[in-house]
Image 1: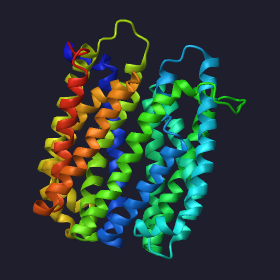
Image 2 (image 1 turned 120 degrees about the vertical axis):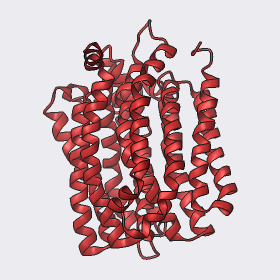
Image 3 (image 1 turned 30 degrees about the vertical axis):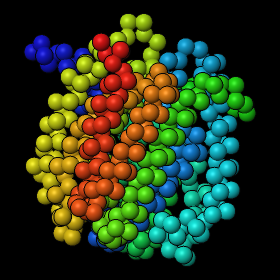
Length: 422
């Protein structure tokens, strides 16, 4: 009974429980969307849609100027309303500046971008549609940052679930009637609909005070948010750019269908990692950002590991044992070959969970140099190992490279934080 009471009083455990339930519902809804993509456009179409989604998320990250983590940290450490308002004015000013720059680039290079991402030489129109859609993605990121900073995990989980449900309905209907082009439209609509539901919720909730009523153009807090900008842009942008690059590598070395299979494995990982990633943005980053004189990294990280790792390990073992039925549910029989990739993907994600606990400390404490060292090492190791292994192991080699990457990153970040972990 004492253990049960302790768990009930553990905010991290309660958060895992609630977001886990919401994540299961999101997964169930997402399964329908992934199944529809697999049935209506197959593995090649899956790869093309993944490229489009990656481009949309990269643009969203750049339009928000990578300030989501700054919003989370500054909201969590909120002391004075005036200071927070100045930070938000700076963030919004950066958002408008970055969006204008990106719109110019998109119009300038629309045909080239469409060709590079296999949209086809007649689909420059898609890039023009992005001009309207991607700013909404950036604004969603900023509003999620506000809710994460206040640890509003219930509201955030519910809003994400609602957006996933709406996107899935659009995706299935538009894929059925319009095929691949319908899938593009569904992805574009996700950002617009998500923006609407976030604005409606925040304006009617206790968190509306976090949004400045009188926006003033200015960059008075640029030094405060600059470290977060640098770290987030490097992380988010390069993740998606490298994903596009690896799909290109697989397409050149093997074929587009194989790139789709590798993407399918990534999407399975994304589905179950939803349960985990929200813990880092809603609990770990705000916790590490609080001004607490008694904070000790070793004590806090051990506490998180004791709660998180057993749950993650149990879940990943279950995913591995159920890999064949999971693949059949998510995709079609043509995708069954990805079951051989599960072991490497799960190993990679298990080490990734532990690595992220320490990586978020670097973000919270604005340790720019250490963060850049880890990210440069991470991306270099992934690319080099993928190129080295793909000839002998095919797409399995790329997944193996991901496992090597996170094992190496965990060793490196622990070494960099060794003095804090004593």
